[in-house]
Image (tube, rainbow, N blue to C red):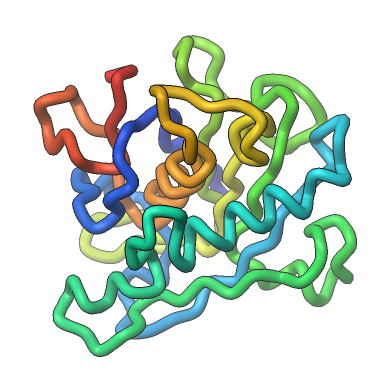
Length: 211
């Protein structure tokens, strides 16, 4: 069965992935496994500057493997659950999504789409337009199955606003906002929802001034 679910907006303050909270019951199926790798690729066809793929790809790799604050990021999170490392390991493709063969691209679970405008264009989905701060978003895609009431999806599309993803612009006064944007949307893919307010787990990557 195929299904697609929009699961969130993108504005937040802190890079502390380990403190993200609010499980939303929608996530990659690997979150139930003792160990799994998640392949990802970066798509540059939605931007007028496709040569910026390298900058976006570098920022995504840095956010997933260890960002500019020298914090241990997603590759070390198994230790927060008692180990052994690693529970989920992210593996990046060497080329842009659109340059991969169908056989290579087909099994990739995470596609990061770098977009000049995440609300219109050529991508399969658009970010909701009724939320003024929602300039990036995550979409779950089937096939899916249910475990303990959770919807477990095999694939995710993560749409990132290009000026943030490549570091041309910032938000919330954060020079490294690209990492926050990437971590936030990746957080949705592993099952975190947006928080309900600034006093609700304020150091979570899933929060921001926008809430």
